[in-house]
Length: 118
Image (cartoon, rainbow, N blue to C red; front, top):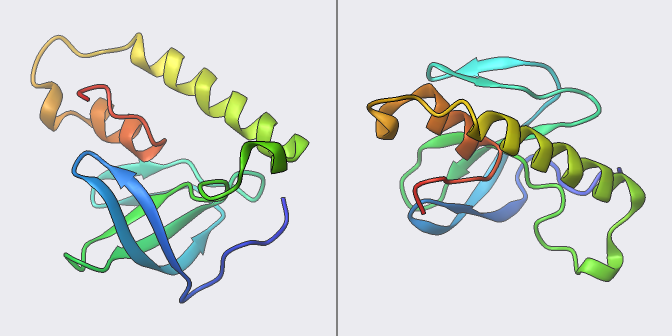
């Protein structure tokens, strides 16, 4: 994928509370744990550490293709979307029996841009 975002860029992403606006703090290219949540970033599938403009809280997000129009998707974009869909389907099947709202399962899915509680 073409390098689209850099440190300091203002971006927006979807959360359980709606659209959030923030600033890119860092590009993540290797797996890392942030606040007890595993972030599966890699060189091939980077994520970005972003800081919410409203709350100041940091989170890792996949924001590579948020603002592209569908007819502008590259083959890499489509392959990445298929990978995310596959992960979400697989991970959704592993739903815990209790305390979903505070589970690593929920936070992991949200990390990939999916909120099963919506």
